Every structure is written in structure tokens, then in C-alpha cells.
Length: 233
Image: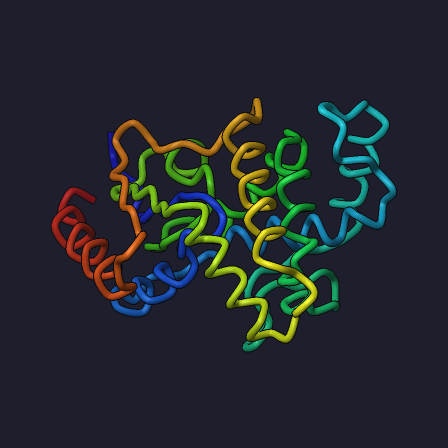
């Protein structure tokens, strides 16, 4: 079976996926698709519908509201320079990085109607162009035939520390380390145990633990692997 010209970079929250993916994309001249930003954008937008996404299953009325929302509004990825994700004419690039949106994204991600919309959106952007995508089900669901599949992980403590430092740099000082650590552990549990597209390493994926490693180490490993395998495309 022909391989998709894609690097699938999966892993839990805070493992460094987006940082690594951006640098790999730059070195290899690939399109970079930040699927986490896409989930966050959808979560941010749908929170205003009044639907309770903490429910284990949405009813048909909820799903109809969501489908109508997707029909009536237009999400765009990298619509223009400086705009990562946009809803209609509203730039969501900054607001989706607020800490509470991460929890919202985890809540909506377990519902099929939303995952189906996002999968179609992600595939439509890439089409026949070489790309790197980071997320939680890229190598298992979105591009199961990706030529390179990496599962990037790190200890919960290290991921919480990274997130804590990131929020401090943005001036979001209302979150302490322990609450961030608890949120990350909770999100890990939700992501790994959800019924639809749970977070896991693809059977033919390579696990790369970023704990104690430099970003350069991880980027070099993935770039070399791509160069070795791209001949199979």
C-alpha cells in the first residue's frame, strides 16, 4: 500500500509536539498542521452553544446543533500571515491558548460528530502535499499510512513544568504548578480512555521520550528518519 507523504507526530499534552513539528517542517520544507489549535478553536467556538460536553454521549439534538454550527460558520487554518486559526472573520490565535480552552478541547474530542469534522478539515488541508501533523490520533486514525509515525512523550511532571513556564511567559499567573499537573493527568486519562480515537502509539510507530532530551535531538532524529524513508513514497 502506498504511504502518505506525512509525518504523524502524536503524544500527550505538553510533550513538545508543536515545537518539534515546527522545526522539522522548517528543515524539511513541509507544511505544518497544528491539529491541537484546530481542536481548541472548535472547542472555543462551541462553548457558546450551551451544550454540556462533559456528558459521555451527546443526544441527537446536540449533534444537530453542532452540525448546524459547522454548516453556518467557516473555520480556516493559517488563513493569512499571523493568523493560525480563524472563525469567520474572527482571529482565534491568541484566545485558544488560554488554559481553560485546553480542558474544553479534551471534553469535545471524545464526540464523534466533532472528530469527523476535524478529520475532514485536516485531510483537506494536506491533500497531496508533504506535511507534518501533530495531535493524538494522526498516526492511528487520520493518516494510518503515514510514512513516519512518532509517539512523543515525557513525564507528567516535566510536561506540567513546561506548561507552567509557558503560561508564566504569557503573563497568565493565576495557575499554580500543582493545578496544571492535575489538569495534565486528567487530560491524559480522558484522552487515553475515550471510546473514539483514544491517545495511543500506532502499532508501527516509534516512541520518543523527550524527558531530558533537547529539542535539537528530537528534531534531528525525525528529520533523519524522514530522509531514510521518503524513498518509499
